[in-house]
Image (cartoon, rainbow, N blue to C red; front, side, top):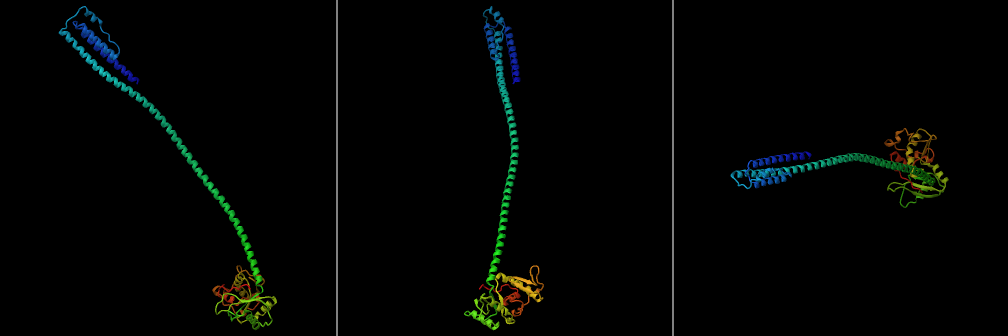
Amino acid sequence: MGQHKHKKRKRKSKTSDSSENGENGGSEQCSQVPDQESHDSSMLSSIISVASNVLYGTPILTKPNVANKTDHLGPTTSTPKTQAATKPSGDIISQLNEQNDKLDKIMQKLVKLDQIDHIEEKLEKVNATVAKFNNRISDVERKLTENSAAVSAISARVEKLEEQGVNTDHERDLKRHEKTIESLCKSLDSMRRDYRALEASITDLQCRSMKMNLIFTGIGGETKDEDTEDKLRAFLYYELGIDEHIQFGNVHRFGRYVRGQDRPIVARFLYQKDLIAVRSRSHRLRNTGYGIREQYPTSIERRRRELYPAMRYHRSRGDNVKMVRDTLYVNGQRYDPETEPTEDPTYFGSHVVPAPPIGNMDKGTPEDQPMEGEDQLIAQGSTDAPTPTQS
């Protein structure tokens, strides 16, 4: 802006010089015409002075001697020469006006330049402000980036902590469930032991309640209205030769009724001596198709049925064999079917040979003899023998 002002001063000085040169030229021309009237001379001087004041604000010094020199001459008449001398003054005024217009235009341009300078200054200030804002925005963006990274790290840490918390909860739940399962397993084992003990107790009670029962097989002639006790007494008299009066608690047939098949008879003795007397004469039933045996609970009968092949095998070898309830003893040692399987394949599976008639199985004590129907089922590989009911 300072440079523009300096240029403006230079331009004003140039215009003032040119105006002064023009004024001096005009005065010289006026001086060359001695016959010019004083009125015209003073008018020209006043116009130039006014123009100088308007344009530059400084008066132009005139030559008063011209007026003084012409004052003593008195009034003069205008001549063609004087009229010719007044013409250049009009040209000077027009030139001055033109230069004044040019100067006005220049002044307007200078004003515009000053405004442009002001605008540039404002733009510089705005640019500085924008630069500051850019710097602040850059700082904010940098901080946002740092904060984003920190937030991401915190989020990852929180997720990890949550996972650890979830895993911890899962581990806690698993431990609690493991304890619960362990407790349940212990309870289940205890319940199983109690169940086995209860089952053994029930089986023992059943065995005790069936201790005085005998099962008779092969007695035919079954009818709906038969007297089973009379038919059993006749069997004891004719087949075993027992004519004593034996007292029974109950006598009946058991099992599912099938037409054309005779069901076994179970008899409950009131006195053990009568039961022993009947069992001691069971050897008389050899080759007769009849059979006598003790009654046991279903679970005992099932296990006895599994041991019959081994009992026959060891008996065929001449071993001392005895079966008590569901336990087989060979030569005084308890037989274990898992560790001591029989070596004779004819007693198992499809290779089992038919068992001999029940009458031929009278060796040993009467409690060792299987019933006839059950023996045949074992030979066929079946376990669906009729189960006696408790009397």
